[in-house]
Image 1 (tube, rainbow, N blue to C red):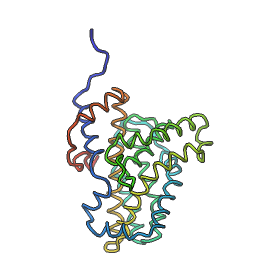
Image 2: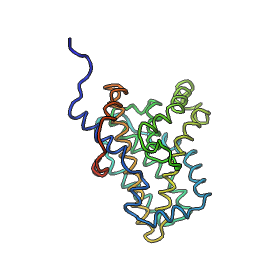
Image 3: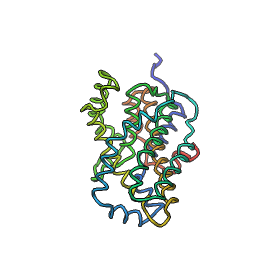
Image 4: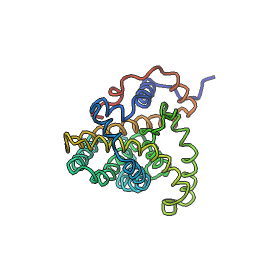
Length: 278
């Protein structure tokens, strides 16, 4: 008797390995430290606590609205998602924030979030995810948590599926609520607020890292552009990996993908996971 289960092609196996290499590699903060060095870590430690709090609050309030703006005009497509133009746009926005410095970063961050979420949504569409579905939009926001950190040395920081498990309950509650009431009635709903809080708790830490690096006075606008370039590339990598795994889960089932994911060896160098030109 022939099995009705789909066959893992070499392309499927390569996609799984590439995704794991990306998702289990160093954090955005580690990448910043590698390129910027000690000044970034000093700047992050010297940031006033109220700045961390304001960045966290801004992330929680703004990311849902930013996503709804970001998906305007995008539709499902199998064509390449043109990620380079989003990186160039983010660099221009970051250069403006770095040039003016200080409070300008609080204005620059929402603009960067819209650009980045549009890049993430384009990747989702390229992987066959319909952007009109609420589940897809929530999965786009999930990328922000997957690419962030808890800031508490949480064990979930060490694994992609650990973060997804931590988000399962708030994500399911938000999905049910939005399915029942739609976008119009969901913006301030407790289930969606709870999910956005879970996402922004991790994403806000990464935003603080970005703000600290962009505020370095030594290179001004150039620093802001470079940091935004690294920032959006980080989340584009995470999005490609996340939506590739979701595509494989639709094809083979979540349990099978997780089993093969866990069987893979140590990740390769992250910079090789997704070429910059992708």
